[in-house]
Image (cartoon, rainbow, N blue to C red; front, side, top):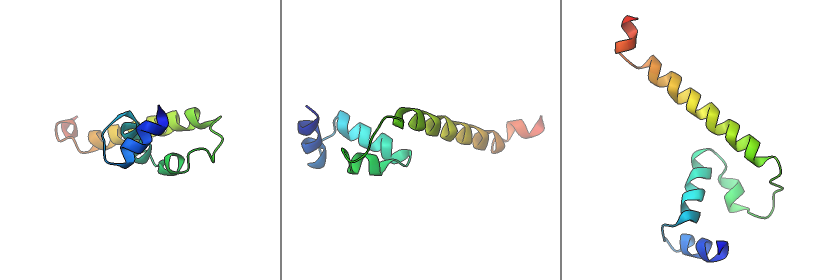
Length: 73
């Protein structure tokens, strides 16, 4: 299933493999997708989860800093 999805993704089809690729790229893990099979992914879920949490916190703090309503408080 994955190989068919990957072939379709590489041919421009939007599918779940394309969504996974975008997700990995958005969080700085494009190399994991591009070099699939060359990495041991034992600790990857923990690292990926922490990256998502860190990015969320950073975006959240940035939105607080740029919120004009909160400047009054």
